[in-house]
Image (cartoon, rainbow, N blue to C red; front, side, top):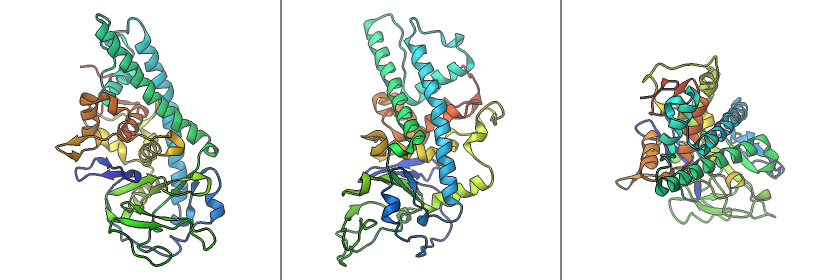
Amino acid sequence: MRKESLFGSACYGLAVVLSCVTGAWSAPYNTTRDVFAKPSLQTLTERDVVVVEQTCLNGWPEIVRSSMGEALDIVNYVVPRLETLTAIISEDPVPSMALMSNADRTLFRTFESFFGQIYFGTNTQDAKDKNEDGLERVMTVLATAQNIRDALTDPDSVNINVYCDDGWWANTDPAGSPRPSNRHWFDGRYWTPNNQIGAWVNIPRCRDDARTLAYSYHPPFDVPDDAATLVLCRQGMIRWYGSYQGGDTIGQYHGPNGIRQPSNAVQLNTLSNYMPHTILHEFTHLEPVMGIGLDDECLDNGAEVYGWRCIRQLARESPEKSVNNADSFALFAMAIYADNNDWSTGVSRTLGFYP
């Protein structure tokens, strides 16, 4: 689950839900029958990343597919950069930071900011052991990027149903029995008189929290082709659609003709406002993509914290958990792709920034 916190950063949670996203909400909630018509079983049994268009407003399926294309562009860029980092820290000795190219220095510093220190020198056996741990973390993040790349490159290899909202949740089952608690909702998407598939699920719906942008979960019952569910909430879709209509996409931060932000002008968390960030975050939770998804979180005085604050806390205190945090991976990928700046300090800096 991905949310936007009251402080403007993104937040996530885990239950039967594998992930969730939140954002600003101001438009009225309009639940028309056409929007929430039950998808055909034929559509849902095709092995593919399927956008269930009956849940979308006009133009929304196109931006979902465009965002998935952008997410693929991002991981296609991130994978070779991580392979470069693997080669750098496998050298003996590892080159001095000052002697690295601007691009490689930015890559090295950004990885350590997100996932903890990865190189400790070679003077002692303890340092060498820590280097091995660092290399393992790089390889773990690389494997995550490769898994998502493979799923987006070959959608036929996975089965994910993508919805533009979650109006199917019901407060009674098909027999009219009430829900067992005020946190339970009935998933009857696949229910027919001859195929009685469904279950009560303890899950927060999109409309239960106006900050929620997306969530994903695997239904707790047998479904056609074992499909996972990814919901992009209406409140998020409205915002993303507006951004796309205005030409505001993550692609404008990438490449030689991309935006180069002034130092200290832009917060890293700004990059989480783009739909590809949400796609990357949610894909780390999906069983067809990752098997056991990423789900480590960070706490501050018992409460979950998110965005850059969470990322830095995990990197400093629990590097081994940072590589299993969906937000850390998604925002790292966005930062590496936005390659006209160094984002390793949580704000835009001149590329190759070196204190």
